[in-house]
Length: 255
Image (cartoon, rainbow, N blue to C red):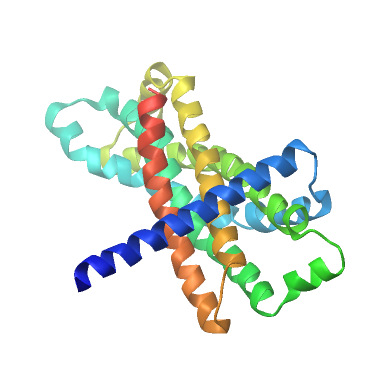
């Protein structure tokens, strides 16, 4: 009976959080349809979440492209398939590896910070203070952050894809002695524009997942400073889970 009770509590907690995230998404969509958004807050969050994240995304993307070449280098040497190196690296980075790794990095940096910031505002009753001043916190705090994360993920993925391909090209030349022109021709002739768009569409959805989870756990935090810590942990775990689930669903749809 104890096991059944524990499973029941876990299921109820899961459905409660899933319902809260879904309701938050509906409220955000309604605000956007009505044009209720604080544009100054949006610009501030675009800088904080997007521009400041560029250095870590560049580093992540560069080594991601290099890893693709290192992993495939064994088989390239064995079969002499140097003409497929650019295609393999580009296809994997554009469609899967780039969006997932950058999304997880974005969640760890931006999502966790957003949860902590909103959680601190919640436990110190700053959000209640906004309501007391007749300021709706949803269009003022939540909607700009959701939109900013979606736009930031889209733009960061474009930068990350370019850096990853450059990193793969450099590593293929250093490790496998593959000419830049060979790598580029293999990449340009075989990787399609749709492969890039698949990754960018995934990135927008990943940004939405990170934004909704971080905002939900940040605004529903309870228990003071310890509660903020638990909320950050729950938000990062939930965002990673949603990224993997949405990646599987989008991969089946965007073939």
